[in-house]
Length: 316
Ligand code: GLU
Image (cartoon, rainbow, N blue to C red; front, side, top):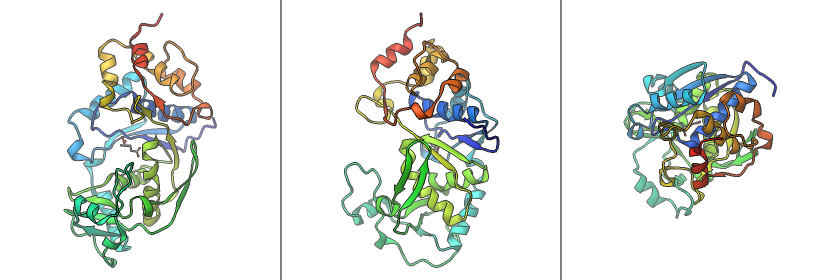
């Protein structure tokens, strides 16, 4: 891999719970790509989803990442510590008539929308609910604000998945960029931070693939260039095909750690899930040397009880 010291990436955990095998794999691959490529690594705590943020979770995640052998060159920074950069972005968007306040509740939007597909967890905001918009000011922080999504495809090249085309007008419509809690939404916060922190490489789970089109629309509306390079990694799922979560049992890294499973055993497991020849135990440094995205499967990784047994078994 060619080294590029001007590249910057971020590890961006949400402190809404502990690190589990699924998100640990994404962070490990992100970090390994950075270390192999000579990129700088930022640790950014995405703590704006305040109802779901758990006290102490950010410190525990950082501690777990360190225990696994990961490190970073800058941070941790916390998004909640300074909301001014997000307010500034909202002012620009309001001035450009790209956002508008919207006090409709989710139920009201759902009622107005046509029947959502069973596999959609987001309701598309129907265009007829959008009011006429004039250039204005970002005055009321205690209401939801939506971003105007015009018809059209958004394309980008994913370094792992290849060319992507998404149509946010068809899937989500005008999405929320500022919430009535007085905080930016995830979409706006990520765009503002990736730009101001100079992030050039975004590496994350494929569950965020459809957010990328929204983030590109926001970047373009704000005139933020250059656009980062995106790499979306397949998710780890349970035997039911759903994203690894509590319902699949306790896959928290700290639980394995408390039970005496060494970090090297966990890295070896994550390596097996990343197309690397199986080893009984492996350091994070060895993982950097061994990782080759070009041989990694595009399919989701299925976590099963045999994986859990393998982790707990004492090597040799
Ligand atoms: N904080 C997000 C998460 O934990 C990741 C956001 C991103 O990488 O853009 O799912």
